Image (cartoon, rainbow, N blue to C red; front, side, top):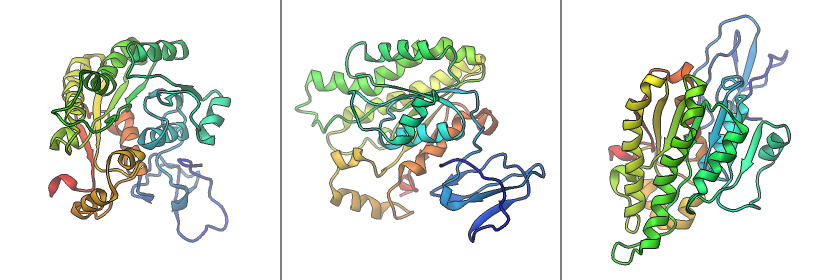
Length: 308
């Protein structure tokens, strides 16, 4: 299972990364282990093929809410929080009945996860989700506002009021509504963190037909910075993760293969990103032990796309 370290074995397999003591923290980006720290003599082994990310008790006894977690980046974020010991409310999308991976169903059966669907494009959808979440958690240590998408490409000349309202309600209003509703539970947790998903398009303006989506993500970025200043006296940190061009069904729906290949060639690392590339950033920004002096920031995950 991802995110777990194992006890040292007598015969270590080739390619294993050993450390002489307990692992405090380990970051794996793109399935390559970059940092190990050891501080006792208990022994331990990390295997690259396990996709080890962080210590499995990093979020033990922590309550986490992740929206937009039925697929893509949000699903991987939920997986890694569960792997690190958190109890997680997983927003599985707008509609019930979606096929979900076994690890979520197992976590639900073990009462480590609560799976909720909610339509954030509908009036009252975010408020109902928050009400259900607060019935499960009296404290929220981490809120990840990840739900959002373009809902389609809408040229400026033909954008309807209904299109505009749905995009803004999903990508912008739901973030404000959930944050407001869960704020008492975040304050009760003492030292909580909010991590909001924005987008590279918040800086670049996106491609044709995505102007309102891009603007809504820019709103969330600025809102998060203002919120970081306002909530700092309560010990709540607020940061953003800004993915670049990531290989999820978002781009399968809204981008052609030709456009994606053109984008790939422009990226210094010469590849599109993955959900696994993005997810560790959320855990890093959520953990006080790793990022306790970081707030009001936007962490860009884009393979160098913005330096071109």
